[in-house]
Length: 538
Image 1: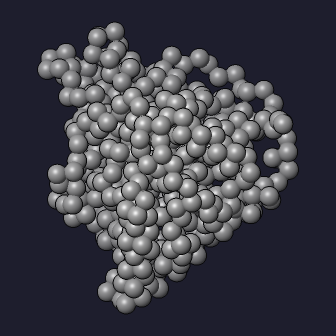
Image 2: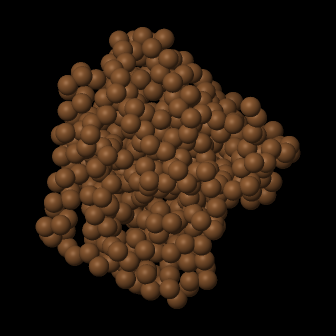
Image 3: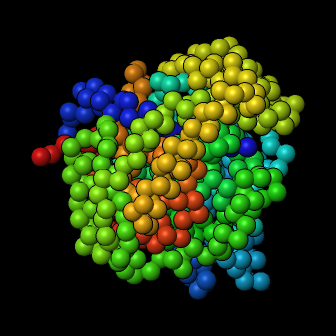
């Protein structure tokens, strides 16, 4: 099985559309709303774990405070609308974990820590798993996804489900990221009229606003790194096969993965250690045997950039001048920290990925979603992609009010994965992204990683015309199935922008080391201020 997608595949084509973001972009931000002080604002997982260990804090208290924060910030106040559903058993679970800690000690660093997960990740509890679609309201998976199970085993409190771009943004090509029929529109906590990006928009906005300690998103192409960048977070898209996809609503068996999203590299490393590992229910994870680490934080060392060889991507389409200025400052920081930069390493095949990638996704989406839906119980009205398309047509006033479902329609007419068109497209993707792409350029230049801006600043949400994405770099690593991590590198008019490090398969330890050193050097993350619109100065 598999999971999700973002608008990043369109980044190369629609960056120029950023000029049409409308009159709202010309306003100067008015005063921030009166948001109550929150005692766990920007508090790290490690800090919460230490307070729990010392007995100065209890999971029940932390969980209660986060639930109050969701009520104040997400449901009322700025009304970010990032959490689609609260776990009604969250307090009871936290109390049980407090008792267990007292009687037996902690299970690990996530024991008692509240975590938010995206609403395409199955949980066998009182919460639903709907991918934001009204077609799956009432769905009760027969068991936890492997990710949810591993989080519970680690002692995490599943606080709730995060909103997302409906069907992980693989429904209509002219979509508005962060909108779902069930959950409505998620707003960016840095400027409420701007987009949180897709499709893990709810997870990103919620974690950025300290509505949970950390979160889990999913990505097919950009859906972890893009919203993380737009919301000032660290987000890691793992190597496909490091984290199980079992029990996650799919898009692509070639590219889908779940991954951690947090406010710091250390929090992301802690969460990755909890969810990574082989799983009999996902054959892709067989390759992770012997490559999984229980503690990825051991790679977060001082001077992690010293002597590292880093390739720079320069053929960047759609990015605005101000984002590129921030990028140049990030590159200077890498040099100051001792990295050896190899300029202009762009493989020519990166520009040829979009068409074969889309062919692969259309074929795999139909096959994967049909298999997932067939396993759901009788309470769900849709049993196939064709049923979903029909449901949307019958409920067009709620589901198709802002954009259509052309991607679903195109996927429905595709044949089985044995067809030559599919196999040829997948082979081409692997050749261009892996052998003649990331692998070749890294071996030729003896690189430890490649860097590029993750994306431009968040665009003004436009339900009339759809997304106005201003650049993106997620596709090469996504198509290759290789890891990528984004870290805040600066701001454009107060809106966060991130730097992506990506590399060969199973290079998460190296990427985390480099990302941590960059984070320590830049210290670029700022708390969101929940402004009505961006502050345009200078």
